[in-house]
Image 1 (cartoon, rainbow, N blue to C red):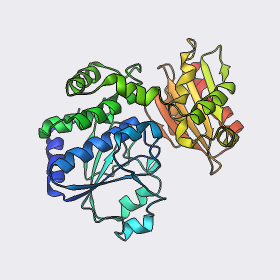
Image 2 (image 1 turned 180 degrees about the vertical axis):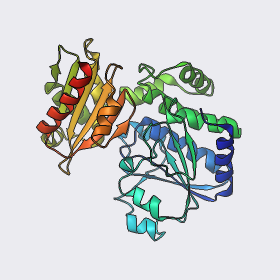
Image 3 (image 1 turned 120 degrees about the vertical axis):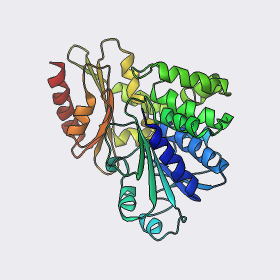
Length: 333
């Protein structure tokens, strides 16, 4: 849990600010998107200006949280423009659901060179200490829980919009309360958010019953690549650049697809390998607990949690498959 003195420092930092830049990790997920909106609404209620920036486009199924388009680093604003103050003149940067260089490609260079104050709020085990003030809680199932605790400490109101955003953050990072990180804290906070006005049926539809045809076709292609190893204990899936081209889907459409194979009862660990346009392979890993996927991701320069992690591999798809399979085999034995 975050110490009270750190919450106090964070509130003091926000109170002193006038212009706040809010950002998160590359490929923003539900926790990242929900926290960004909740934090922006709370800070704006204090009479301050906020600007959102993402390192990748917002996935379509999270767009219902946003009232306007969000600027994308590398597309709408370059590193040079940030350094020259052309995007906006900020006096505070808030990092949400991230604190490591490998999840902030390009933007981490701006963090290292600028003199702005930084508040980092994160629940991951891996981090590079970017925050002047850091609210870190690796026991939290989602960063949304830490943001909620900050709001309660500061006595900031939980509006309908904030409640929905934080509910999305927590619900998605717990797999709609199916993952092993779903504890009493998760249910207590989500219960309070529901009482604050969250329509869970509406949120579930937006998140999980709102696939595009392109994304569904991509999932079919991924499932056709499914391989089982070690008596069904390991499932490996892949998505190639050809799959993206022929399905019409985008890279963001891969989010959560790794979980489809976990519906097979024998699967203890799951791997999704995705060919990226720059020639690397994005490796996503999930586990029921018998395999520590954080150790595997860390071996390849990635990070995450014991049961959910990822990394980029500088090798071909087949080489990546062999390398990751060999690492998992060591643990299954």
